[in-house]
Length: 115
Image 1 (tube, one colour):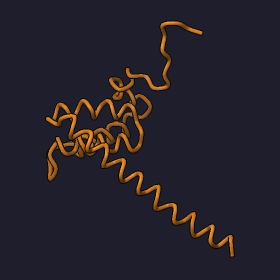
Image 2 (spheres, helix red, strand yellow):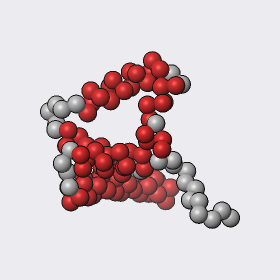
Image 3 (cartoon, one colour):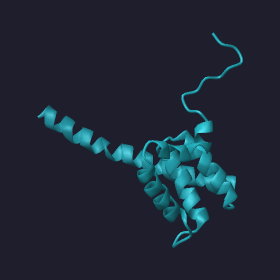
Image 4 (spheres, one colour):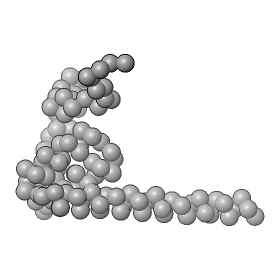
C-alpha cells in the first residue's frame, strides 16, 4: 500500500494537455479544434448559455475532464453555483427520463414472453 499518494484513473494534467491529442493525427485534430471553436463562438446562444449546456452534458456523459473544464468556463462566463446546479439537474432529469422510457421496451418484452 502506498501512503500519501492518491492514484486516479483520470489525470487532471491531461486537461491542460488536451491540445497534444494532435500528435496522433494533426490534420484531424486541427479540424476538430476548428469545429470546436466555431461551436463555442458567440452565436444565437451566448457563451454563458453554451458553457452551461456543456456543463450539463458533461455530467450526463460523466466526463471528469469536461466537468472540470466547463465548471471553470461557466464561472468565467458569469454563471453562478445556483445556475450551474440547475443545469446539472436538467441533465439529470433528461437522463432519468431516458432511462425510464426504455422501461417500456422491457415491459413490452415481458408481455411478449409471458404470452
